[in-house]
Image: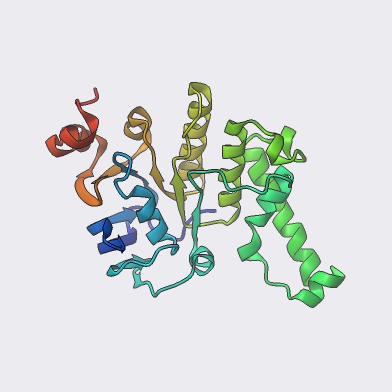
Length: 263
């Protein structure tokens, strides 16, 4: 799951992105980059345009203006599954798992972009299809061990508590073996212990696998602890960009979002 980029190289950049829905401007002239190997936080009040920006990055929305660059190349207008094949995976603010399927089967769906055997080999389950299945199952079992969810591997995810469902969703995104992992409020609705576990797993994914992470998160203590850099949006505009310490001291960010500086 490691990237081929050198740490510190720009992996993805958005340049002058503007997105409107009718007369409503969701994003207005937004530019920032995400460097390989970093944890990049996107913060701001509700309605700031954070999820819209992730939707632009993963191809769900196509902006009216601006460009997205990935691995040094200007990206064409692609569908989300094509962008997933390029190496960008995503989790969602509202859990989007197959509730009737087991943890293992949900994680296996994350390997879809890695499967290339045609329908003939899949039907007879021999040769390439069988070898792919075995390799993908081994990879998923590694993720199950990494996320410490061995005990629920055969449990339908609809029966799991919320915190474990969020962990399974993270596992499914990891199964895609992405270069860039987009996490939309991965700790929303969690208690303190669940947040601590999720923070640990996010940092371990970043550290052990070298996966670049961009996340939206409202818990400022979490953001300031785990993010290398932070970009701040407010009503679709960028009002701050820098290290956690720089954001703490940014008066425009304090006035619009933080209220007071966080020590």
